[in-house]
Length: 294
Image (cartoon, rainbow, N blue to C red; front, side):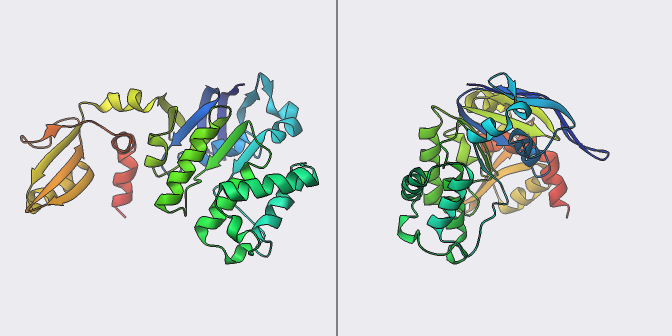
């Protein structure tokens, strides 16, 4: 099983959103990292056949998905970032409705819906109307609908939005168990959601696929660029004006700064092991600095 993107380019007028993205994916979990506007959602919509690329094509097992539209949809599960639902449906009836659209038999739809409600922890409120559910519950319902047809390709755009820390841990365990036999693509702003479970990380910046690899492979690229130092509050404030600060925490009378920099920020700074979050900050430091100016 293989999902292949060949030279995917997408333009909106004169704006280039995706710049010849090419990649091949086999079963496993892939974390897609990118800042707002990097092209993640556009890429996912093209993969799911909801949007046509300006150039290039998506292939599943060597066949263009355009030529196998219905068959590809049968093996696809998708949770969009702007997941929509019918407010007055109950959680269970909503899954039954989506199951019918996906072509499941009535018996299979009923059994599968109940199993998924149990899996995402919504069995107790399955007869409650969706408009009365919390944001986290609605998101879990969205995850359940994406799994209804037992998809071979699962595309999840910011799936952990609205989930509390405990729910995110359960979600990571679920995805980890599913990724052995599925191609799972997940985008998130919460780096910790993919750091421990992703087989590979994909970095999309300004519409281009800038890097891919395991977490260890990628963070090794900045092994000489992450520093820690213990400073006074006055020193900390000055460092924040000049350097990219990954973390700042109070430790007694001092402040411990974690800084991503090509060179030591001060003489008493020491190199420390980098994390995926450090790498994210390193890749997207320009965007973060632009945001800080507003």
